[in-house]
Image (cartoon, one colour):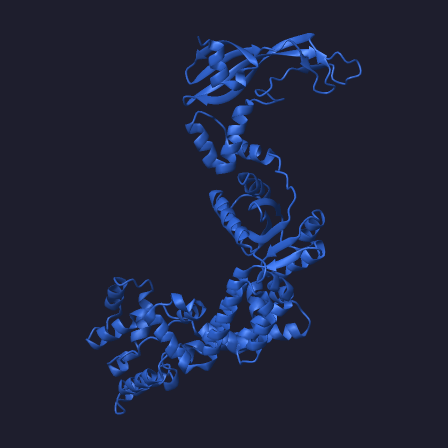
Length: 554
């Protein structure tokens, strides 16, 4: 036969240390009247047992909800005399194990539940969920509970993953440290400085392998803090850097992407569409139009780009002059009022042409709609408002003013030229070169082969990319120096610049291409951190964010 005590012990195990005297249902809650079942207890300071009662009083504790209803425990507790004459505590209050804590107004069970809710949902969302389940708590109380949680122990870490994440993008960054064996975050550093990482590593000499990206601060910090460890540059980042170099190479040879015969036909078409010599007004209009050389039809090099070109050259000259004067990237950024990333791009640019190629390769939002606009203009529709409405139905998201500026030059000749077939986009050609040939679509492979036959530099780039991919696939980092020599034998400035960067971090890159470790799990953890930041609307301070990062993984 099951007794009431058995039911309480099974369903409410946290109440086994008390005697439940009465259970009442009030208007909006359930009230449990109870008293301690212990005859004696120990002093929390000297651990001497005592049974001498000084006084009694009632504690009111919020408990976990029952069937969605709030629960309050009215617990009668006793204050005891301490029997140790040398103890500074003359009296003390008894605590029920698993139920009460000093100064707490919640049971230990409810506190643990609210801690879990706070870790998962943080403030406002956590408070709303708790209220739906009969646990009243404010958002600030939830955050205080999370902040008060102790950090999990770091333990022994043999393989460490290091990466940065943004607290405030472009301004404040922190560093995440990951145990690569368990994929568990073990610490969060308040910045991404070399000294901070070096200090942490010096306190953990057991680290033997460090996986990281190619940031100089982490390389320096790992070298100073853990000279015994092998540093592995992340293969994904190395491959990404190679892709950026390939893209620059494609941009530099973008003239090879369009068939020369098509380019000539487009130029002749443009000449046929020119106004007659006899019309003085039309001649004046044509003279004011931006003129595109025949050999550059299909590119974005127009008179409208000239101010941009002049601005690029002026800024590049200013940055290089300060660099020659011995100033670093941050000092240059402050003096010229530039973003640090912009200053770095101009600082390391091998020439103005490299910057110019990137700028002039940008496509217009109108490019894919130009054939349709030309067709409609030649059919007699020259109203920019009507044309804009029509192409918006096809997905155009630009302004009517852009359409007007495009068709305005055609009004002089009263006919739009037949547009040349658009060359493949820079990003598409880069993707074809970087992709495994076995995974290319037949039509893409055919277009790429035509381009490579026309451009020896891009053909050489494709060979080097294939060789590097084989190194990554087979983990043959011993071939890296040979690969670098082959690249330097060709006239490929962007790839040469890439190899120069590899040589600056040669040991880590070689280890990354040889050992099975990579920084992928750390990158995945950074993505989870971004989700945590979004749940707190990007307003969490580092101490709260750090607790959620470390404790949600345990």
